Figure 1 (spheres, rainbow, N blue to C red):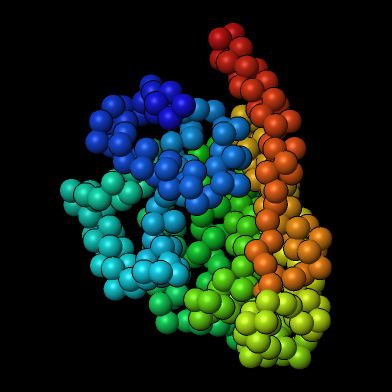
Figure 2 (cartoon, helix red, strand yellow):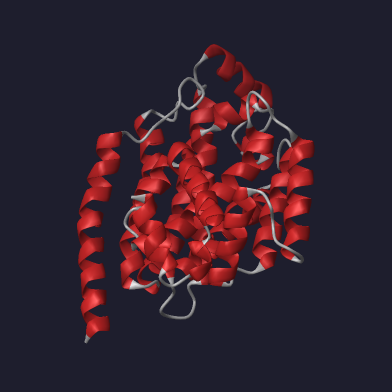
Length: 314
């Protein structure tokens, strides 16, 4: 399937005729399929010619993130070296590493602003030294670079058809990230980080030691569950802000976006179904539930592409 998708992209983007660049995109596809199963599933609803660029955006983000988020072999110094080299190469001959090459090609094809990528890399570097955030607004400044700009990077690929799609795209990226933070409290503790604002912990009488004790015991204390219920409700407000953006992109992109919206929103539902117990286990949206969302969308996406093809032929 990846060869077909790359061939489709090459018809409108001659740079993808380069075998080495195609191999770089395939590497990003592998990263996406392995580490971002929910989003990868949604990507399959896009027209084939657009899918490789989403692989590159995800692959770049994942590759950078792994420098600081790996539980077995983190290498913060390598993140600084790699990100500096990538940004410098954008101004000269172009990146030499495969993930960087695919990202640079995607930026060229879709006119993705450099400042969005710089903001992302800045947030990744924050993970080297920051282990918590005092307020929700402090956290949102981090999330702007770590996730909101990912929504903005995706937006050109999804092709907005009306003005004003930027704010929903930012809100959706932020909602995705906060959903992950809520689900991954335990894993983030293992990395020495807490992405729940300190002001929220204080409001619910929760300390970092309470979180660590729950992690060690394999259970989530009642006060932490109340805190997480609050975080879930606030994140749902972001999803509500993002929802109008689905109708603002090209018809052939809407089912991909809606599927991602519903699947990531499903993380919050899974957390609730688990009684907000995220310290004792990893909450998951099961494959049957993911398929129940994605398969109807797949049929609608194919219909939208056929309609687009007939319109272009006419």
